[in-house]
Image 1 (spheres, rainbow, N blue to C red):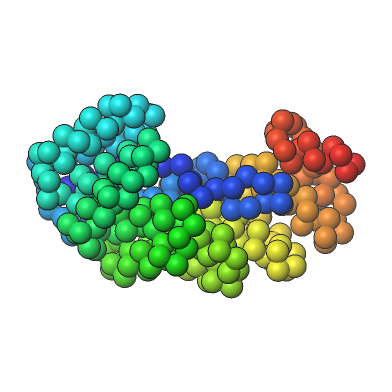
Image 2: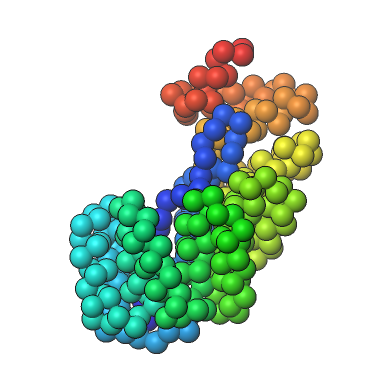
Length: 264
């Protein structure tokens, strides 16, 4: 069975000055920054298509979409019953911007293995990106019901991101906490909890989550701007100045740094 980790960019990430849901690269010891999951269901045995699935995933990571597509199609031809083959084809179609084909391939993958957690999670993320929040949440919950899902924090995080996009901060808070319960070092959820805490005016909590985030991941323009805003609310001018200095020096061309210049 293929266990290749396929890294897809956070499709739902939003890099805004106000600090949306953006999550960036993690350190190696902090876990996988991808929120799509592994290619492959632990309930599915070996398939003759696995070699093509692995190749497609590798090419997809490298951005070689033509090769990724060719191998994904070969995987489906070799074993049309393979859920994982249709899953990787869906991921390729999604990267190519062919939404209709991506949707059909996700559904093909899930119809062949209704408990494939990676496919369920990725399809939920895909639907959320289209603004179909309720439908997406259902797929995240289905993924989380599989006791053999090796990275359940990814689906919990995706569910939280989707809930936040839908404006449900209470549900988002619950889902991000669920992700951190099983993976306390998952940086995207730590940053999301800092963001939600700030929005709920719980600034001490926001500070604490940002400190935990900094222990497992390098700061981004978004996290530094959130830290600047948090310390401003807490009245710690030294920490505020420190965040501002790091933001200007590390990310001088970011929207956050440019905005900071206008208010200083």
